[in-house]
Amino acid sequence: MTDQATEILAANAAFYRAFEKKDLEAMSSVWSQGTVSICIHPGRKALKGWKDIRSSWEAIFRNTQYLEIETDIVTTEVRNNIAYVILIENILQVSDRRKAQAQSMATNIFEFIGGKWYLIHHHGSPLMR
Image (cartoon, rainbow, N blue to C red; front, side):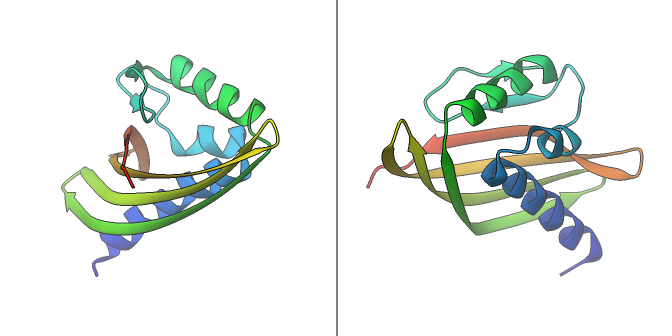
């Protein structure tokens, strides 16, 4: 594994750690703050720009009491200043005292900006059991 691939996997892990811990500050440090960032939560419309993406994470964190996320990496690719991780998300979520388990296929795209890898695109699609 190359150093860049290791860095991408670390950035990807930081995203899921922020997600699982419901840590908006950590989530903010993972995402590019630009207007071209895109987030597509499973079953939802595309959100463009950090302002709308941040609002979506705030709502998820506010309405979720507990999260557990395990990921299974399918592939990782690095090309110059763009990289992607394709993976399966296994999510256990508790909201309104109701437990739900879900599985999504996700693509996370990172861009190397100012010496750091930032998430610029997250797309999760539900997998049927």
